[in-house]
Length: 190
Image (cartoon, rainbow, N blue to C red; front, side, top):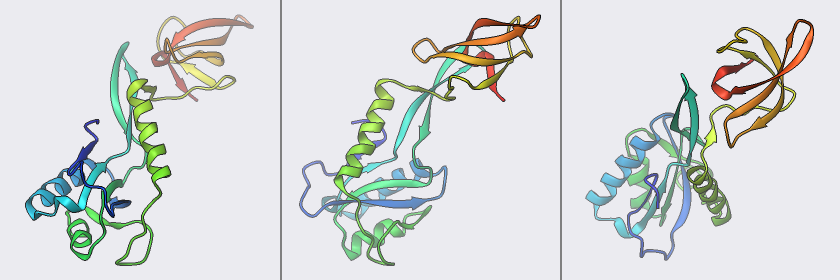
């Protein structure tokens, strides 16, 4: 289990289903924490399971230094495993920074399938196991060199190596295309 999910009552299964909550964008973790606190104070832990903020780790290179940050798959949304009753619905709906449930009718939201939840969890685990670069590059794309001896040159991406965070870019020097090896942080998309 990662820090983006919490089993409030790991033994509970029963009538629990997964629901999607709409929250203020950028406040997903705050909503998760608020829900955890409200659930534990209310004494309704048996009606709740896990709470997920779907996110993945991304690698960013700034000034030659790699840093790992977190990117949310669905900004403004939180997944919650719960047994839907009037009391549990009110507890979630009245949590600060929650605007409501997604899907269904006004006071009876519809759950999402376990297959959808499994797909999201697999995506989250893949992001933890192997962080993705923050910027994705494609062969044939035009980039501008922003660091190094070829600064301000434009070039065409010939090869992308995500393992080493490097690109082979063809820059035009003296009228000829010359392949140059560059790190992701040394270029920017045009």
